[in-house]
Length: 496
Image (cartoon, rainbow, N blue to C red; front, side, top):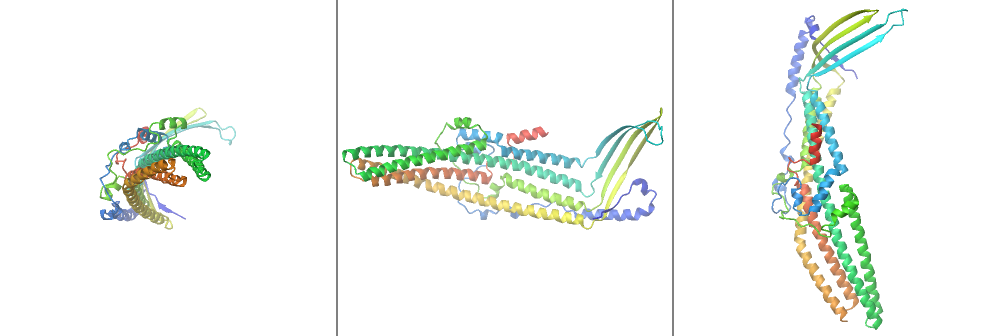
């Protein structure tokens, strides 16, 4: 594909008066092109959902708390310690921060294109020509200073810089989103471990109690107060309870391994840090488990949506830069040079300079620039549709979090009553069995019901806390639009 350009310098224009008409036409083209470049639009209002679309049950407002404040409401110092460790050492977050540095470098590179470029060149060369024979040695030395500056007629360079800056802001917001996501992920893993420890504690207590009943049944069988079938049933129940306790302990070991991967801590140090509060689920202080009634108030706090918005603005700026590339480009350039030539003991010096504008006027490129502009516009449409999808997904996440949280709160009281009732039934059945008034099958049924109710209560408590953590993440709580992670602040300071 051929690209035809016309370049003219000021020195040539003075001796070519026939080009004045062409220059006038070029000026008209410049003005008409300027009028075709519209300023970046505001994002459509329909991107943010209306309050009428917020259908999930709601409660007190969840405040826009920054940093670790929102996690402090879980009232667990071990969790805060693990979150801080993960933020400082998690490899995934470090990768995101490295991408911020890359985006910052690209933004600085794009911004420098708006400034005049100045280069210094030096040359020192010694030579002897092969022909004619006996030619003297020549020494050439020169120093030059070259400068160039593009007059940004159609804001091509400015829009490229604007796009790079928007990409930088998007990467910084992505880092904040990754930080919030990591904190929530550590919280979920921590809740999973604590609930697993509690379930293991329940399973071990049940295994110990069942083993004691099996021993008592063996004694009764020996004196003839228990049938062989009932004794075998209780022995089988004791073995099954021990099996379940071992399985639950293995699940807890896997949960510890997951926290090791998230926090990048040495496993021994992590286990030591986890000792306080073992088998205890956190208790939320100042329970406020819903978001404000207007969805936009919650979604405006999500850093990933703010990053998506910056990506839309960057795509629009890149569209403008691609459109501006279809029009003439004007560049000022200048050069100052000094040279010295030595031949056979003699020397000669020279000074030179040049200055003038250079106009590049695209005449024919087979539609390449137009296609690039259309492609940039399509990428903007794609970014806009992606932002809309992100908003819809955010609404879904908050709605689902509210439903799960409301259901967990409503079910917990019932689960507590059920666990207490089955526990009382087990105690009464055991007393009856010891007195010979109940069978071993009745005792085993009561034990299973009580164990299931206790386990279900712990799981439901974990689900409620997990739903609260997910809601904090979905609504952007823990990020106030201004706070930056210590690692991100350090990264910015190093770059400066």
